[in-house]
Image (cartoon, rainbow, N blue to C red; front, side):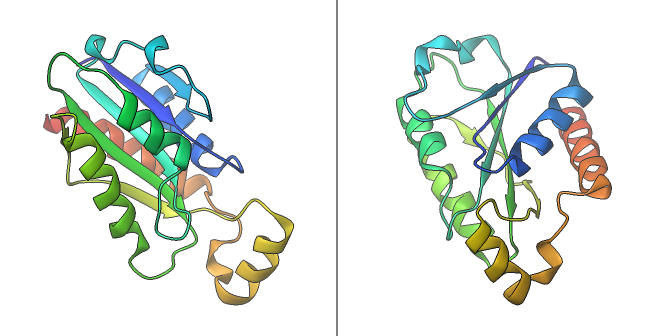
Length: 160
C-alpha cells in the first residue's frame, strides 16, 4: 500500500508526529501551508493519505482545510487523520467531523480510527495559559507519543 503524509503545523508538534509516521512507513512527507500548490502532489498515486493538523479551538488548520477543499482526485482512496492538541474537551471530535466532511465532499473516505496526542502550544501567551489550564500538555509530543503514532500508522496500514 502506497502512503503519503500531509501535515500542517504551526509550532512543530504536528510535524514531529508526521515525520514519525512517514519514517515508520518509509513514505513521502509534505508540509501543507498557506498558498500551497494543490496540484504539486498527485494523490492518485497513493492508496492511503495521512492528514495531520493541530487542533485550533475545535478547528483544523485553515491551510489543511483549504488544501482538502481544493484537491482533485480521480479515484477513491483512504484518508487517515492525526492531530495534536492541548486536550480540551471533545474538540478532537469536532476537528474529525470537519475533516471528514471535507474529504467526503471529494468522494473520499476518512477512516474512523484517528490518532491524537497532546501537543504543547506555539506562542508564548498560549504556553502561559496552557500551563495554568492544561499542565499535562507541556512536553508533548513526547517519546511515548511518537512511539504510539508509529504503532498506530503501522497497524492502520495492516488493517486496510
